[in-house]
Image (cartoon, rainbow, N blue to C red; front, top):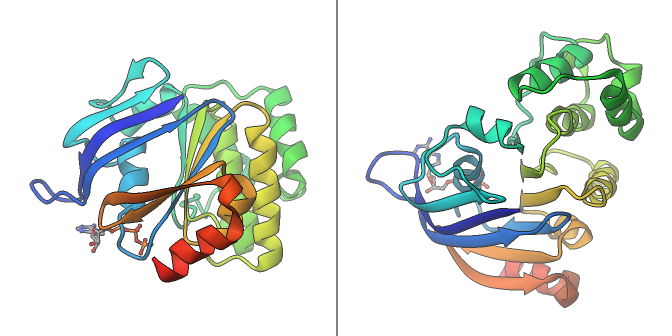
Length: 232
Ligand SMILES: Nc1ncnc2c1ncn2[C@@H]1O[C@H](COP(=O)(O)OP(=O)(O)OP(=O)(O)O)[C@@H](O)[C@H]1O
C-alpha cells in the first residue's frame, strides 16, 4: 500500500538526513520505525507525507507515484499524517477539528463517518463542542488520530504518538491502532516506545543516522525491540 525506495531527503537543500530508505507496508499491515533522538524518524514521516520534498528515490501509495507531490496531494491520495505534537487547532472545537481535517482531504464528512470515528473514540463525541486546546494530552492524541481517520485514509503515518502519554493512555493508543489496522488501513509508526511497537507492528525497522540498520519482525518480540532500543 505504501512503498518507499532508495529515499533520500532532509530539512535543507543539499543536506540529506535520510540516505536511501526502503520500506513497504501492505494494506492492514503495521510497520514500526524505532531510533534514537535525531535518527531521522520525523524527517522520514515528513518525507512520506509530503511536508518535506523527496531529494532522490520514490514514494508510492498503491500504484500512485506521489514522489513529486506535496502533502495536500498525498492526503487526497489517502495518506494521512498524525504529526509529532498532535498539531490540532487549539482554538477550534473538537468537532470543527474533525471537519477541517476532512475538508483538507477533499472528503465530505457524513453523519455516518462521524459516528464511526466517535464510536471508536467516545471522548470526541462527549467533548465535541469543547475547545480542542482544553483537552488533556491523551485526549488530544485521540483527536489527532480521529482527524486522520475522517480523511478515510489507506495509510496513516504516525510520528511518536506515545509522546508525553501515561502508560495507560499508551495501552489505549495500542488498542486503537490495532483496531484501525483491522479495518485494512496500513500504519507506519515512528516510535521510541518499544512496547507500543511490539503491541501494534508486524515489523520494526531500526533507523540510525538516516539509514535502516536492522529489521526486526514481530515474532522476535519485545526483548529484541528493547535490545535494539537500549543497546543498539
Ligand atoms: N528543522 C530542521 N532543520 C535542519 N535540521 C534538522 C531540523 N530538524 C531536525 N534536524 C536534524 O535532522 C536530523 C534528524 O532529526 P529528526 O528530528 O528527523 O530525527 P528524529 O529521529 O525524529 O528525532 P527525535 O526523536 O528527537 O524527534 C538530526 O540531525 C537533526 O538535528
